[in-house]
Image (cartoon, rainbow, N blue to C red; front, side):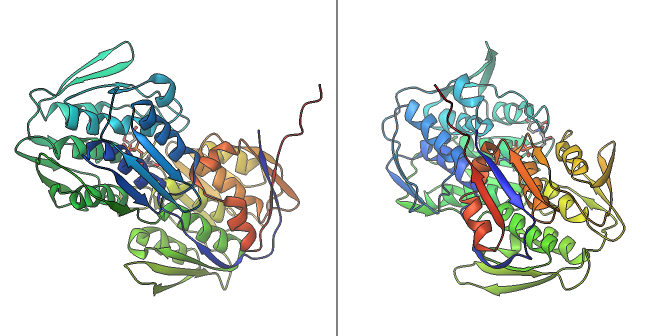
Length: 430
Ligand code: UD1
């Protein structure tokens, strides 16, 4: 398995172009199942998770063409032969569960494997299922599969007990084809949910209120759109900006959106950074982060549903605060087990103590490079950026996590002056 070797690097500087958002692309690719004619998706990042979702659609009989370098994915959803997402594919990528809403929405039936837990928590799907039942869809869990019967599906009032991103997306996809009106209350407000709703609206769905906690949907019979461009990846942007802050450099993340990152940028400023926003046309911005003085401790950062501080940037922020002057507290309220990076950062010389769902980060003067391993995507990114300031070499193992979510990660970091290289395992001798 590949690893990434990072050496203590000079302050990062330069521009990095932000790719399309993985977490918007995945549900939108799944939602093309709802369409009646071919769709071309643009600004699709070249990532292992995208290939996995493409494979899932192909396994159902759809025809696809993924031009990785151009960032386009063409999907012809007109011939679907199997209305099933098998365990083997769902277990490799939880986001496969996003096909449930689209399948039952269009075909009125579906069989989708239940996803298991993962490194960051148990991640049940009870909220997804309750939301679909509110649309009069009958669900049975049999032999590890959710079997959905939507023959009597109709619009209804869907109240989410928690603003789950995935549950809002599944409910939205079923509701756009459900006869009558649906209201989703306590909906997730994440930009990726809004992007899915905007994609569906571009295809002719009648949706109002996306981006707020209450979404109104009027079911339609037909959906089609020629092409759609995915929004930029706010988490990728935040990762490069956190790296700029940690190394004391100046980095401009281009083609992203400030409005998706307000809580994160406010906390970077509290940590002693300066931010500059310049419009880049088409609703996009270039965001520049620099740090003129020391890293300052932040009294409390709390991960929350959007527009709060995103859980997907918690680990990267923690890497930054490891070298702050003073003690910071980071509280994780979205996932119950999302501090797996703490022990690895401590192995690099950080001083972090976990108490319940809070991490108490006492700033230290320096970190030291070591082999590290993370069991989730964002934790791996945090270890990588910590490696940029650690004395000596840091080897980040299990790189497949990074490849799931960061396009051209070594190339982009090298372009900013980082000393980073991918190490391929030596071929086994016969
Ligand atoms: C999505 C993102 C993930 C991000 C998360 C929160 C994708 C592919 N992934 O994940 O990167 O960290 O949003 O912003 O878009 N929950 C339940 N029951 C449910 C559903 C969720 O208890 O039926 C819990 C989860 O276990 C978790 C919390 O709700 O503790 C948030 O989960 P959710 O918003 O659903 O996240 P995902 O859609 O899985």
